[in-house]
Image (cartoon, rainbow, N blue to C red):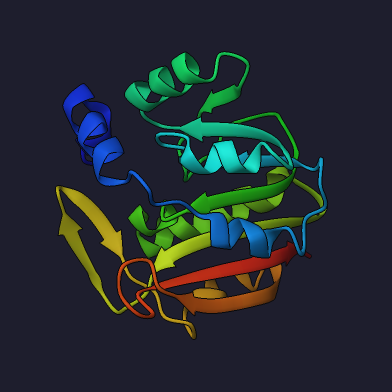
Length: 188
């Protein structure tokens, strides 16, 4: 695993590069399926941009695997709830009604994504909702030392179908037309 999100310099760079980018559109779609005040885990909270939007409607717990990001989050949100979690194993005793991530799970290899999805199923309550975004495309690459796994509309749902009913899979533009996908699904 790359150390990109682990150093103060790279976290500062990421926060600068991601300024003005947020998952507001995804969160708006999520609201159609997850009621207000629901407990929600955000995987890979990073600088906290989406966490700040999510906390307006949900009892959100942020998480990250980077001490640098966790330090940043706790310093900027002293009343917030944050956990140190790996996106694959998600080791926590807590249960949630929803799980959200924005361009986080694309850092997982296919076998790791399968493990993460099974674990998400375990920590969700009955009829729990997941909402995740991914880069759209084929294959994988290393970008800034980070593994990036691309997904297609047809292949992405197959990772979730064993544990979840697919509610929505759509393309959207993050930086270029149709460069991204999001998926919303309900626990079986």
